[in-house]
Length: 471
Ligand SMILES: Nc1ncnc2c1ncn2[C@@H]1O[C@H](COP(=O)(O)OP(=O)(O)OP(=O)(O)O)[C@@H](O)[C@H]1O
Ligand SMILES: [Mg+2]
Image 1 (cartoon, rainbow, N blue to C red):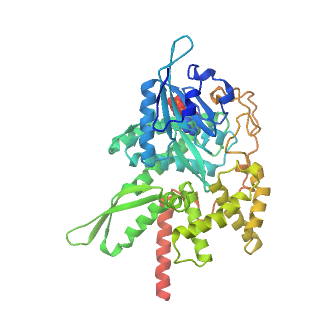
Image 2: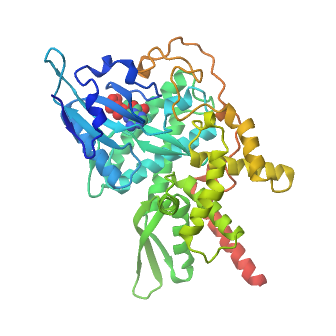
Image 3: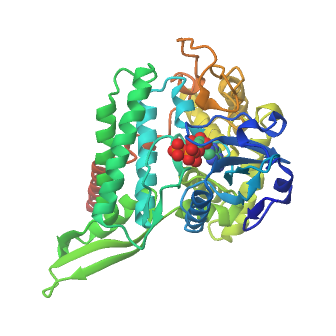
């Protein structure tokens, strides 16, 4: 009899064929979804409306990974969510089988390989790299030593024109109180090796833009990580006449998607030198706020975008002093939901609702710019659906056998490669610059460009001073 370890077990899982090696599971309960390369056997199963990822692995490793994923979820760190471990499996002849780790399938997630099989623009690669760097810094901030940083162990979700990265494989991880510089360097060394290998692989397969070089990419990741880390934790010293630098620091951190819970501010005896260091840096402020107000569970950039729209709605309807949660409810039912519902049913699997709403806002902005006046929302949706959305691949459940990419030798096991190694790259509407609306003006090309953020802060300060001088 197999034994289940789970915090909130889904009883329907008990009926799965645990006495059969995962590799031989009948395909009727399996779902063919894109996934990364792995040493272990991994399959996706559908149980009712839920999709789970099932990985066959040694018992102690399964339990270790289950616990770590639990801790990461509890600490609000982007990772896949653990569901349980099944141990004590035996086959029909009484022979023992490996244990199994079950996680929730991360909806709308894309393994990097499925982003690259279509060929990607340089800009997209930069945004992927940024998401990866933010994930690594977030893990390090909470004391998580990953031990196996790689693109295959990361999943990506679209986040308002950019990407959010999730940890998918915690097998080698360790959670500490704090990480020493040496421990972080250790993770970086591993990252360098793994990522170089992965980018070189893509290059050898002709999937990497000619302008991109594995070594340059790996160095960029390392440099951006170091910049971000020093922005997050570095000590800054200045004199008393430059108090605005405290605010600038907070703004820059916010712009990077981090919250500053506390700043450690110390002054010297004469009070002329001030040192600041962000104390507790936390992420996900906007998504938590949006979740609290509307129940929408989104990525951070999507949340920021939706909250801006909510603010705009509040101003437009002249409800500055009304209760925030009431306005949020109005916005949800009068603005957000009608847009999502205006999309024909068969196209709903193309994009997650928050990303869809974001895209429609971008599209409307773009149309209004062209028209020279504000285009009504209803027209913007119609145009978006017919000119953009229809052409996009499904992301909810991208069938690995479908017509949206090369056919796999075994749709339930992408590690076996493609059925026919046809060299031509299929057309990817995501990568078509003419059709895909670009990210917003404030968006993400300078996402981790700290120098640019500094320049921006300096410029806005200069313009404030100018305004004051005029006024
Ligand atoms: N919960 C999940 N949601 C979506 N995809 C998942 C999930 N769990 C696993 N995957 C997919 O399966 C792949 C393999 O999972 P994982 O990295 O845990 O296996 P592994 O055999 O331990 O890998 P490694 O070879 O690095 O040890 C991942 O890259 C990911 O694409
Ligand atoms: Mg892995």
